[in-house]
Image 1 (cartoon, rainbow, N blue to C red):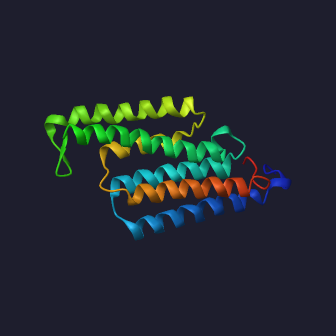
Image 2 (cartoon, rainbow, N blue to C red):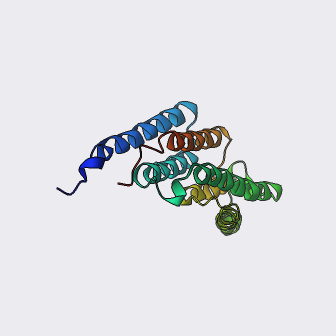
Image 3 (tube, helix red, strand yellow):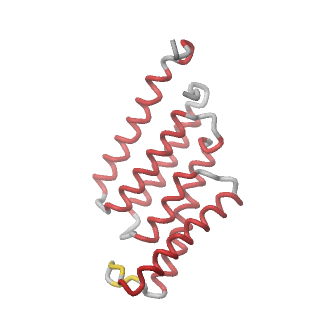
Length: 170
């Protein structure tokens, strides 16, 4: 048999818990807002985070500080560049003009670079959270979904901490 009998149940309940977490996140996102790009990237990032927490809980990036800190850094990096974009009025009426499209893409990429630097400096590396920096620049209509993503990351970090003695690497 390929599955170690001592961790056999973990192959069932850990993925089930990851699934339940993502169902809860998607349900809350659908209930609160429908900013589809932020919604999709946020859900995708949180799904990747759930994978790390529930399949590789012993990895460095699965530590609660890395999860929570990574998302905070990702959002802050994006907000910094989003503020620059709004200050220089590169986005008008919620639309990206073709005149500024490449500049916007460059600034969005720079927000990811800043995110990498800050995560490294603060020792809060969590790769799925870097996507938040990008989407905060490209498509941020309001902060409801962002708050929900940060709250979900906090909950995931707390869940990981609470289950630390029961989770095993699959």
